Length: 86
Image 1 (cartoon, rainbow, N blue to C red):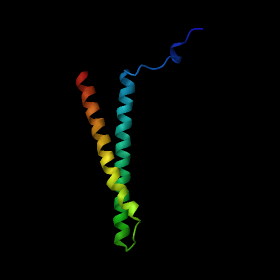
Image 2: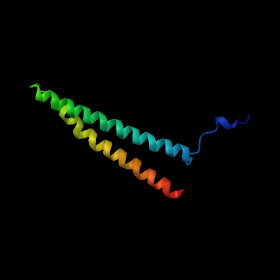
Image 3: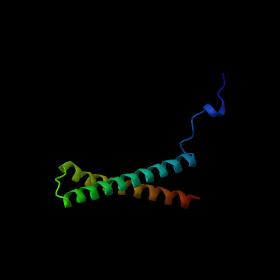
Image 4: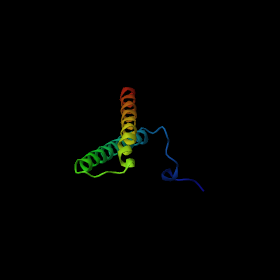
């Protein structure tokens, strides 16, 4: 039996797949950054109203913001490399 073209695995060097991976990394970095900022602002607002948020909540932005920054920088570098090859 022969395989049809739709059943063959995609080529990992396919530019569309790389572009999709770049955009996923950028989206993940953006979402993590926004979530970390919202948690940070929420924690500050809670402190302003006299609440005592859990210590873990204050650590979330400290961990998520650098990860988001690294994801966004990786997506930027990959996009620049892709544009220079074209």
